[in-house]
Each structure stands twice: as C-alpha cells, then as structure tokens.
Image (cartoon, rainbow, N blue to C red; front, side, top):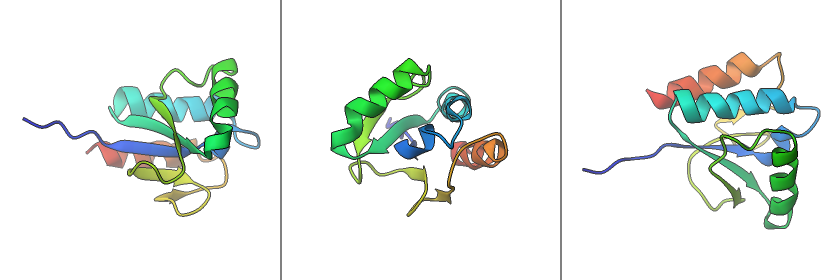
Length: 107
C-alpha cells in the first residue's frame, strides 16, 4: 500500500511583516495537524538559514516539515506569485481564506 502525502508549500516571504507571523503559524498548524499535509517553506537557497532562524525565534517553525529551495518540490503553493492561492500576506483579514484553501486540499 502506498501513502501519498499532499504537500502545501508556503512562500517564505509570507512569514514576514506585513504578514502576521502568528497567523502564518496558525495556517501551518491547521495544515499539519488537522489537514494532515506536509508543510514546506519555499525560499532562495541563500535565505534558508535566515528563515529557519526567523521562524524558530518567532515560534512559527513547530509545524514546518522542511525549508526547500524555489522550484525543488511539487505541491500546492500559497504565495505572492505563480501560486494556487495567490495572496500578498497572511493576516487576520484573510486567515479564513487560507484555512479554507487548505481544508479543500485534505479532502
């Protein structure tokens, strides 16, 4: 029996202001724990250490499986361009939109 893991890929930029890092963490929590998706963060290779430190220091790395380079992994993308859900930020005004998008991926 094969298990297929669905991946949701967040553009790393969405963890920084003007996004709310708390809303970003809530979205990754929902994706990992409730939707049972693999959560990846996508950024340039040169910025992996920066985003790892940023997410760890802000308590937002708990539900992230891996930080990957741009274009390395296939999955459903949430980001500012070329994404299945194209948004400029994750904050309280659109967190429900992000959660509803993730909810549809699990079914």
